[in-house]
Image (tube, rainbow, N blue to C red; front, side, top):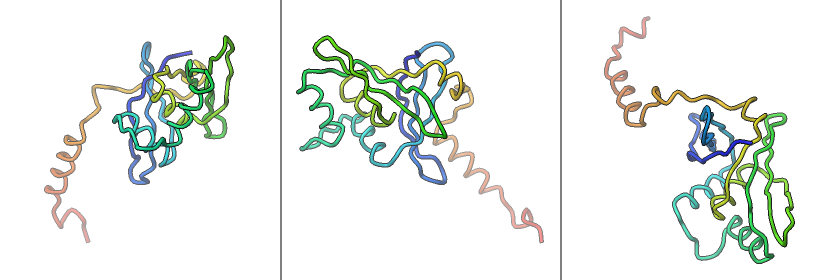
Length: 162
């Protein structure tokens, strides 16, 4: 298994679908992008920003229930991808026993953020779908916008031909 860190949640353009970006902590620092739902993206964003709602949201509730039952989330593990669907597990420890509960990776990460638990991925999963990111070519949003503005300003009507 390889430990991961959450890089953030981004919207894929032009579809505006949220993508959870996880990165391998050590080694090749491979990225693991996983498409997630809007509510899960919001929940992860709230946890990253430290937003505490007046009443518990779903993942806050789950963290409270696990704790009230005398267990802790030891870790979450993203285990595999089948037919473009990712699978994960919650590893819960209570009263000296470990229980493993199947879940979606987005729910696992949202819960891990709330409980301070580590996030892992199976080595076979990272070997199959992990992407090595070239850090040197990553541009900031402002650099991308500047390049796009330069392109727009350089267009002439003649460029479109007739």
